[in-house]
Length: 202
Figure 1 (spheres, rainbow, N blue to C red):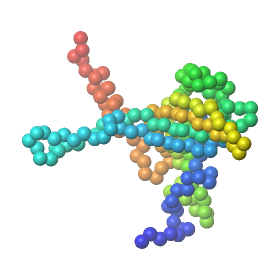
Figure 2 (cartoon, rainbow, N blue to C red):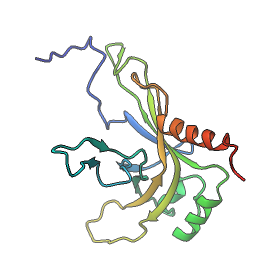
Figure 3 (tube, helix red, strand yellow):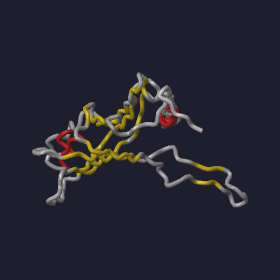
Figure 4 (cartoon, rainbow, N blue to C red):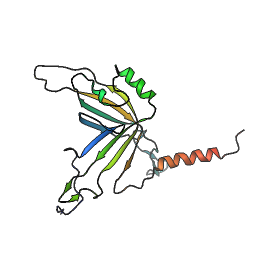
């Protein structure tokens, strides 16, 4: 049976209460009420069993070595005299979704969103591994949709709107267990190296 003690640094993560924050191009995402993350999925719906006609059981199961994009949906509070995207670098001041997409495409550097998890300090001990904050980095972010419509009634107390973002892949830093190696890219680069070293092309 599990026991709990303030002396044990490995605590269950508290997602809210200021222990999780998100940054857009190294700046905090201001007035963000909620951020929903849907991670990438494999490029095929599921694994493929290999079963010849004369075999009573599958002899292998094939899984893909590639994934689709991931999505992030930001729900932001709207302030007076500003659009919700005016808090975000690169796209602040844009007229509409078309201009937002043009600005993102023309950006000098790809957009990154970083999730920062800051474990609490209780009784002089830092939660988690005791090493402090750690990070998830979402690379090559592209805005795919902006919710700019609204429905107003007499009881409406706040207005929130959503921005949808897709990203290509993630990296992470500061975790207790992480070998800092991307085997998918190693596999890709190994194939590329093999082709570039081949001398049989005409």
